[in-house]
Length: 190
Image (cartoon, rainbow, N blue to C red):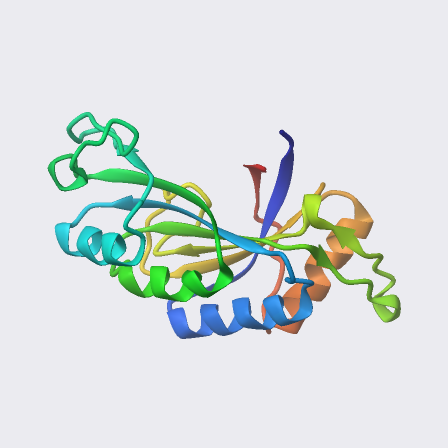
């Protein structure tokens, strides 16, 4: 397992704007065999019910402050709220229904892409799947749902945000969605 740097390129209170940015980035990326991963903190029974309707086999474990339990043990998640969701390897078309089900609960929706394309005009080489990721933090500014806000942040992942070639890709992707790289970077386990 390795790490990537997740660079924030757009933070907005408008979920529609954040989703448009994600769709634009997905249109740029090679997504033939892409998947989406979900991480969230679910606090309300209503959100839980919507998510279970969408993902009946939802993978979760208890959150600090909640009752102990997990999907692996066959426990009832409604009796263990709040819970942390770690449910991976879903088709891309589940991302927006998952986001719509969240209400005000925080999540990170990570898109595992096949590649970022070569962009000769910008001097960018193709980046293979290993470092071709995109994350939308919903109701949170960070990847881990620690900074809860009423806004949403789009992150693009690179191998090392301090390397000029990777910084150039961050700036180029930010420009494509009307965002800007402010220098805010988090380390993400891949």
